[in-house]
Structures are given as C-alpha cells and as structure tokens.
Length: 343
Image 1 (cartoon, rainbow, N blue to C red):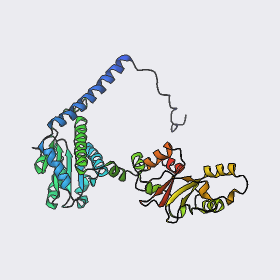
Image 2: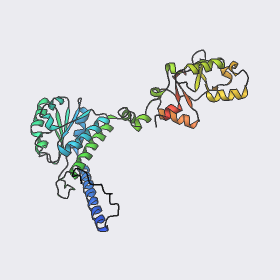
Image 3: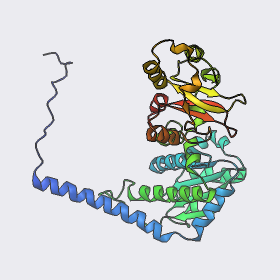
Image 4: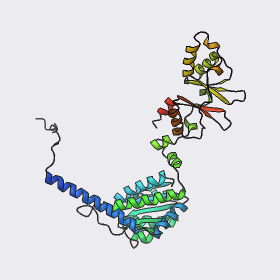
C-alpha cells in the first residue's frame, strides 16, 4: 500500500445520539446561553451617568472613533467599529500591538479611542494608551472595573462588573465578550438616535444591501438624456415609432409633450397593439394624440424606487414617466429594470 495515500473517507454517522449524551450536550449549551444572557442583562442594569458621558464624547468627536482591543476583545471591537461606521460615526479598528510599532500614527488629537479589555490589564495597552493621551486623544474604556489600569488611564469608563465566563474551564472569553458587544451596540445605537440617523442615511452606507436598493431614488435608476424617448403632441405614429427605435435600449414607450414641454401622454407597446386592431390599414398616418394614454401616472425623481414599484404594480403598468416640479418629463422608469434591482 502506498504510504502517502490517504485512507478512504468514511461517511459521517447520522444516527441519533444516545439520549443521555444528547441531554448532557443540550443542558450545557443552555447553561452557556443562560450565563451569557445574564451577563448582558447585568450590564444593562448597571448603566448609569458614565454611559451618557460616553455618548457625549462620541457625539463631540470630530475625528474617528478608534476601537482597540487584544485577542477576542479586539475581534469584538472590530465589530463595534464596523457598526459605528455603518451608522454615521466614522470609525476604524486598531490592533494595540501594531500601534506600538508605528500604527499609532493612525490616532490623531481629534480622535476618540474606545479601548476594550475585560481585565483592564492588557499588557499592550501599557505603552499604547499613555502615547495616545500624549497625542491628545480622549479615551473611553469598556472594562470590568474603573480601578483597573485601563480604567485609570481613561476619560470615561463603561464598567462591565465581575462576570463569570460560560467556559467550563472558566477561561475562554464568552460571557465577557457578549457583554462587551452589547455595551458597544448600546453605545452605537444611542449615538445613532442622537444624531437623527435615518433609514435613508443607513441606505447611503449600504448601497449593495437590500435596504440600500429599496431606498434608492428614482433619479438614480431612471432612463434619462438620450435614453428618454420624447415626441411632440400631434406627431404621426411613424415618427413616434422612429424615435422609439432610435432610442438606446429600445424602450417600450414614448413620452408625449405639449408646446411647453409638459407631459400630456404616453404611447406604449400596448397602445400600438390596440391601434393595429382598430386601424389595420395605414396606422402610421394616425396621430399619437388619438391613441396615447392621457393623464398618465407619474412620479418625481426624488421619490423612492420602491414607491415607483408600488405604482407600477397597483396600476399594472410597465413604464412610469418621471417628471419635474413643472410637469416636464426628465426620465422614465421601466418595470423590468426595477425588477432587476431585486427589491
């Protein structure tokens, strides 16, 4: 047998576990969840004036909120930083060991340092925090005790209090990291509310997400410029079809305007089919005014795309003219193009 050959893989055992094993595992899992939930609840009960002070410091920060922590606390800090950044508070995550080797240059006088450490005695903070203070940055700590080294170096301390880890060995960060994450989320969400951060603001920072797509404006997705087929009232159908055929993308409609450039109707593929049924001979000589849809439903470019979609659905239309405040067409929404956004 070739010694380098791998032994054949065996199929995973899909038989149900022994009932005693199952019960033991589930009981342990429930205990972990209970302990982490208790830790988060205890943090909520302990919130006080220092939390409001931390909110004020974040709101007053004219630079970045620089979030830092070692190990698991650093990973939690990266998530908190991402949450802050996505909800209107500029933020970056900084590894404290890297800060001691040059990355401290990322911290400026106008920044706020948010430092995470359960024990408050993280060795890497001993050189990092005093240097950050010399630069002029303010420091908010999320830690077990205000009497820790981290707490004493900080301008504001969000105390977690003593927490029992959910690890059977009492070692792996579990309850403490859940509490840190909850504290960071609470800080970010209160700051969000204080800023008046809106759904539209959120969508601005999440353009590829489902919400970002739903909150896109009509003006961002409509046909415009040379993609917009516009014909004057009174045009013969042959001219209308010529405009449609010459328009890039071959839209399924033309917008009809009066002498002042205001929208008076829309001529669609459906109108053309009905015209051919009624006037089988010489339909190209007919005037568009007699066969267009008059007083069509319209929407403004500043409205949400989801509103346009609702109108298209409600009135069973394939195209929706977009007009300015004076009623002049500035765009056209096509149902298929909206569907491609996967709202």
